[in-house]
Length: 327
Figure 1: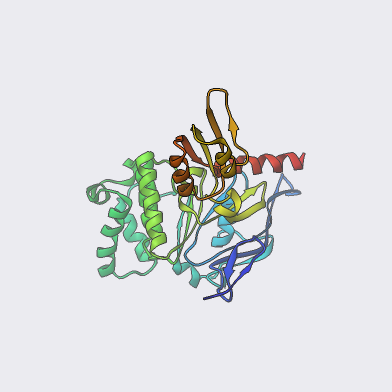
Figure 2: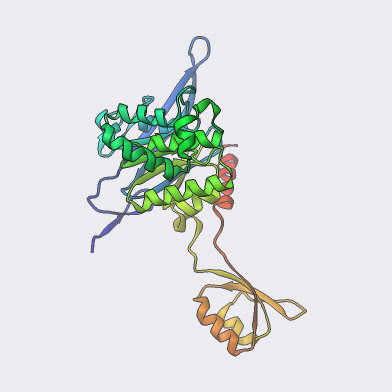
């Protein structure tokens, strides 16, 4: 069995396995003003790691620096200080880009091309042979849920926002990348579209792809991601697995009625009874054993819910804490 070590972000990782994404004190400062004499710090000393096969979610409010970090990783802009690695190569390495897929938040696509023609253009940039294109493009269109007739006959200036997002996702996968960057992939999609996008991401994850994405839809992140990081005002304020940050799934808040008070107190020391015979408390044990015990006591369960905090509650709490500390 491979041994593990604790990294600075408290995530156990395999020894001697190089990260797919790594940043070391990455910093980006923009200059503004007429004389360019004003400094705007967009990213402050960001250090994080993402490993092979992980789905990593980067969260933060608007203006937190998420897109800046993504552009630095992709080599679209250069860092002011610090360094980073993609697939064990320095940021900006051209050969690495052959193994990367990228969906921008607001992809600009060619209005007068059809979706099919645009994917042919993208495939040509990667020098993918025509014989492979003829197989891969229909497969990708089916994967993202874009009808073949629309892709072949309709110019993209007539596409809805959701259809453009689907074409953008298809082009991000055209080169069968090892590492996929998605900037707000759920943007502009209706509930069905978000469900389909989530299934696509889960399918990529099952295929062993590494996925790094930003999103404001925290419920989707909670269902998809292995680990997350939160950026606020350019600063990385926490990173780790969902269990590390939100707590494990083995605590339950239970409401019920009846049973033996003394035995119930042994199961739940914080048990509270109401005047009408109902009770509620937190169970830290295996609830199957508790249910068997309750059945023997002729008790009844009214509700049973996980005690674990939601990602939305945790996110808001962290952002508020940082805002308070700044002021």
